[in-house]
Length: 69
Image (cartoon, rainbow, N blue to C red):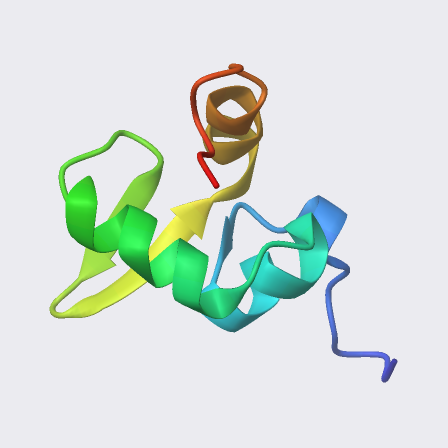
């Protein structure tokens, strides 16, 4: 990690790729969650680019019904 990289645990929002790595959830599954819940409070939209709010998403996935196989 270079001096300019911020660890995932300190970032407010993560890209799909970063969230997949941090939460150990596949990118496809995350993209499906985003498309099915495009107005969820754990999403931050910048135009058509989505960021996942780390703390709110942690709270969301802690619910038993959040991630379905």
